[in-house]
Amino acid sequence: MTTVYDIPADMFIRQVAEELKKNPQIQPPDWAAFAKTGVHKEMPPENDDWWYVRAASVLRRIYTDGPVGIQRMRSIYGGKRNRGPAPSQFRKGSGAIVRKLFQQLEAAGYVSHSSGGRTVTPAGRSFLDNTANSLKAQAAEVAPGLAKY
Image 1 (cartoon, rainbow, N blue to C red):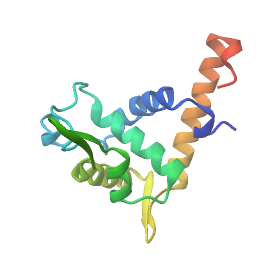
Image 2 (cartoon, rainbow, N blue to C red; image 1 turned 90 degrees about the vertical axis):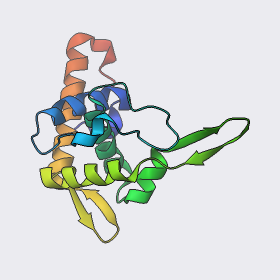
Image 3 (cartoon, rainbow, N blue to C red; image 1 turned 30 degrees about the horizontal axis):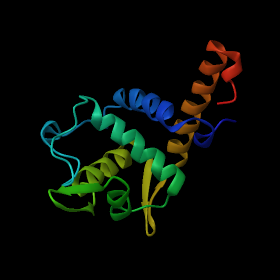
């Protein structure tokens, strides 16, 4: 069986984001069109579907690194803040985005909250593994030499 670890992250996240768009529990809030993803950013994301891409990325990180909490995810999605002539410093990403995504993924049944942090439920693990398996099958159909993914 193909798992998340067997597929390149960029291909996998793109496919999971497309699947999450079909789920009614995963919806960007009203403020998502105007929100920056952290204090280290100057502008909001340009991609209109950034909410689903971030949800897919968060779900993959919970699968690979879980159990994780909001603070660890903020550190993962942080970056360097440009302070002009002063040296750049690391700043964490937005906690509101991560918190809202955790809540939506819990409502969809993909993630559960435990004492150690969020972990992927069996339904979430099945969803991600089936997506990885379908990606591998698509790669085998398109180019048999690429079936290693």
